[in-house]
Image (cartoon, rainbow, N blue to C red):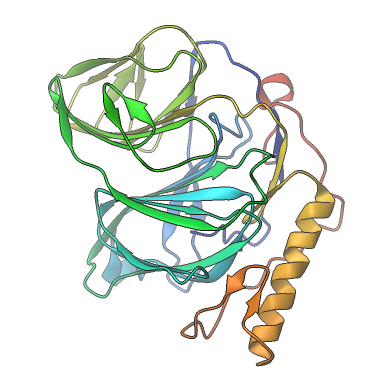
Length: 336
């Protein structure tokens, strides 16, 4: 998915290990373009916190009636310096990218696309989709790996019982379940379904920061309650993660080792400086212009598929230099 805000916000952060208190991060509504503008609820990045581990972006959407919202219609658009993670609860999305990948994503499948130095993809809900519901997340690549090769993986995560709960581990490892999908920094991605009255003590990695996104139901994490749409954050601590459900609940649990290095994120690009963002934008605009003029469809973002009649233009850069921002734990940084 792309960030279709007219004035995308620049983020720079360098997270420090945080205290083990629970923070509640509230979502903000962002229209995903088009005349009917399917809306997403964005909890990362934001003013209070820019990253959880290396997770730097989280959009949560649906359940949407596609007849009313128009569904997902995101033409070709670029990414750099990150991995995109698509996870669906309902509906189907067709993913197409400049590696030549064409894949229909279904609930229970994780799509992980590695941008490296540059990739482009499109995302459209399928004609048979009547309700669309899911999440789109990004993982910032560490500096040593961010200019690497493009890649794509799809994995159908098995659902297993964990006490009274049902669990799918789609990235990383938890409670004896492990995903084979490759990431460049230690991360965790899990879907949890808890029946009303259920309680879990999850043996999470004490070096990880964790986030719990509430999709359905009312839950409690380490004694702090949350409702649908909210994201709860806990810093690294040597203690199990305790989750209980007052009613049937569905959650996404994410986590990872704090990235420990600064990033600058603007539009769909993750970089390390203002100059890199400018260069990445210029390269995208040049490849887009060449394709529109019929000069060529190949370039630094890969080979545009022939079916792409239109690709998204990059927004205008701000008139001032993208300023670095320090750790949100130190200066309450993040998007402003």
